[in-house]
Image (cartoon, rainbow, N blue to C red; front, top):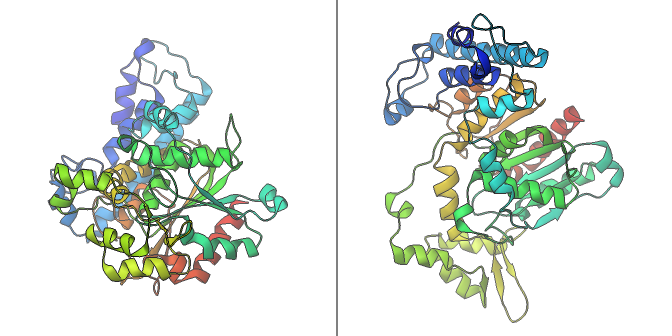
Length: 425
């Protein structure tokens, strides 16, 4: 009613557009701001720490959150319908002036950065290294392409087992190395962030024929693990028309916290991170370098012996390449994992679906209690909160799995992705 009253009081060219109504409602119903939240959603005026510690134990409150999200979806759909009908302005008594096209609603309703940052990111992309698991052109033409995005301290090789198993089922896929990871270049460190990482992935898909140039791309099933889960949420918020489905593997929307000394290194330590070179003359030199940045020695040993090694021979004479990059790790923690961009992206995805801009299914796969990095009850951004922000979010649990579900419970993971592809075809 409040949104309608504001809209009804507007007139002329400056009247409130449907997208603005959606934005108003979304902001009122969201948990994006930790301060002065509306009473409909629970206790107001919580600080971030107090709010995050609050337990999700009020069933009535939880019911109101779901009702609020549903109400937003209904109002957003109504706004989109009114826009499509092009209702004219008739002075102060008119309800809405329809200046915005339906495709503009979701981006503005999300309260995000808009097109400027997306355009800037598109102009600053780097050429990502891509692993191609498309064996059959017939399959490529007849079903969505699965695109895998890895997590922190990882690379495209982590998906080899899952991608090979999907290929045996006739399901094509690609796996990317994010900038600064694997064998992809770092680019300008100042550009590193969710929007840029998402734009890099999209540019790689265009280059590899995964999307059509100059218009909505062929629908893909986008899968992101851990930190990659936050990247794919940003991709879905910025380019929803590309996607048939989004799969977030063991990641929520909470902001990670790290030691202040690590997040704010002195000039000498920052320069040491920046100067890290992934090419090493010997394995021993690589091992010493990675452990000097705080990586556990046994973990580094495992990077050389795992099924698809992250540290592998490069050239001759014992030279090796490290897919792990301490500088990229630091940048990812500062700009992706510790920020609330994923939560804002989830809100934009909800607006996108409510406004009918894209028919996008969203799935979250949660590892077992011993291995998961997800919080069920954290506010804002825990799994249950994500369910209330995005009605229809499909959550599946893998009780026996470690954090990397695709490696620790590979068969179940492949079955899940294959089912998502089937439903998206």
